[in-house]
Image (cartoon, rainbow, N blue to C red; front, side, top):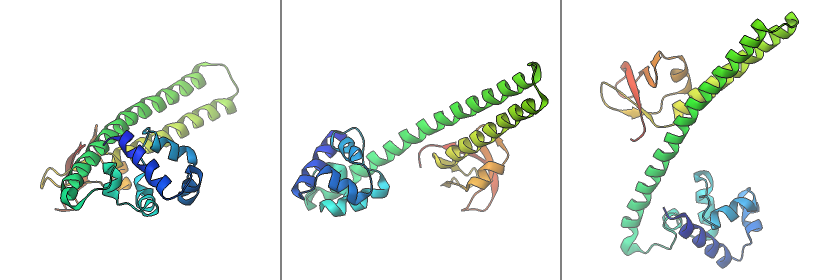
Length: 202
């Protein structure tokens, strides 16, 4: 998707509707800085407010993602291109999230080991030693839970039996046996438990 083109189109539609950036931002419940980022092509509107934005500007989502008013003659072609582009954007974002998951896992592990090491080998009061270890385990637990949440939502798990790709529940990912990003979970389609690999595309 051409973010610059989309940004200019948002600005044009906003002006045609006699709205300032501040007024549009207030209607959408966001900051005018977010509107400015859209209009300069630095970011795209979040999917959660896209429909509301389009309604306010009097355009369709397909128009918005095309950066122009789409005529009926090329509607299907533009829609297909926009859908493919959105899938590619999601795959790219999921890859970045999975890289962040590794970073978070390594970081919280280092924090835990560092605090336990300090508590074990540095001279200090017993209560402080306990506090350091407790803080280390709390940071580790929160970080790992967040990393698991990223793994759960980024991409899909593919059933080894039927090939169905799905996003499982957080609980099933958290408590399942795993080897890296391959987890022993139940497929919602065939109902069988098997080792399912994490994949990016559906």
